[in-house]
Length: 178
Image 1 (cartoon, rainbow, N blue to C red):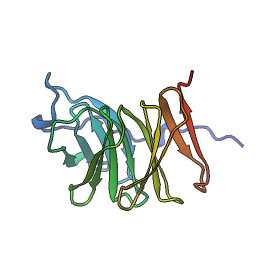
Image 2: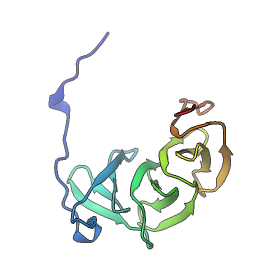
Image 3: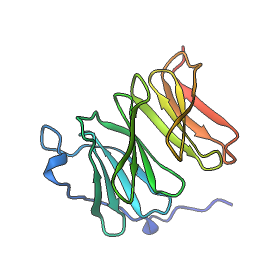
């Protein structure tokens, strides 16, 4: 049985007021990517300025702002861990930042790839993040200490996306292979 979508149940967050220190050079706040926390409390927003904001979904207020200490490239991928306590942030320069959501502390920062992070997905069953990159590879990162577990090679072109099966036993990837 197919159910129709009732748009009256849909809530839309329309405007967030950002502080000036996270504006891009032209004074705008370009939002590149979004992710909800597992409990739907926060909406994480990756910014072209390299920062990431956490917005309380109910109040539409800016709760936290994660700004790397060094100049950072635009944020292009976001993924929470299974509890929503850590947020993995991928940048166009291959950097991965792991943030502690409750304290706003940068837990770990590593240049995991030579090129842009395309997608980050989490497997709650395997306790892993899979990170797809424009450098044709996938890195597997532990979700407790954010340590590199393995690097998967095999794409002849950009690795665009990754997906875990529900039981975490399968990892699929999509790429621009030639």
